[in-house]
Image 1 (tube, helix red, strand yellow):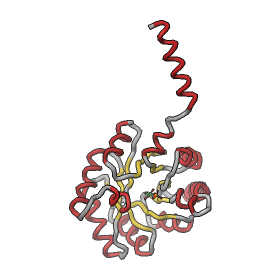
Image 2 (image 1 turned 90 degrees about the vertical axis):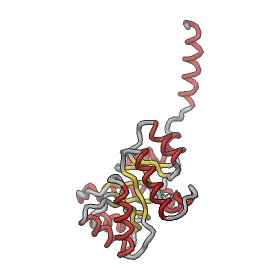
Image 3 (image 1 turned 30 degrees about the horizontal axis):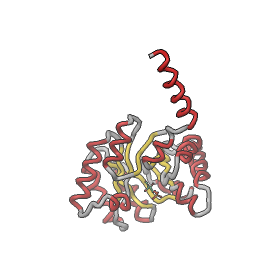
Image 4 (image 1 turned 180 degrees about the vertical axis):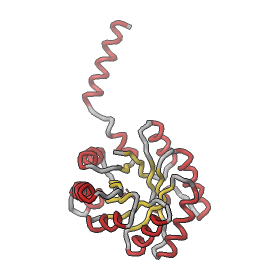
Length: 217
Ligand code: E4P
């Protein structure tokens, strides 16, 4: 399973990248706004900065919701860098646009996916990635991981090449469960990635080893 970081914060992207385990980055308009980026030029520059930091796929989301607008925006975003993946919302014009991008060699990430039906449409349109939102499904009282299991099964049986990119990750256990369920990619906040490092027995064990090491130092 590939690890993407789900943020537009350059310091966090750098910290995750420095670990040596990062395969890419996902952003969305809310994450960009959180960084205080304003204006088209600043947005484009920020994507460039992310591409310079990480050698992997970088999802950049369109904000248009009509076919012509999505295409125009997607073309500009994909021209920023070869690693840019155009993130398109799961709407009717979004699916049409994903098919157009597929036919024209532009890679896509279909976002805001909450059901198997939506994911099948994205795969049929040729999306590079499909992003089921695990945490938001959990927040609404359903089990987000059920969707990852279902997509893993369907995509396997059908031989879809679209990669399952588990998104809206809230904690380290989500990451583990996604790996178990067969997600191709998991995009995570930095805290959830770092949470994987932790186990109290590791801390206790290391303290004891360091204490004992003093006896022969
Ligand atoms: C990533 O592609 C999604 O935009 C993101 O994971 C959504 O996460 P959230 O539900 O924590 O906002």
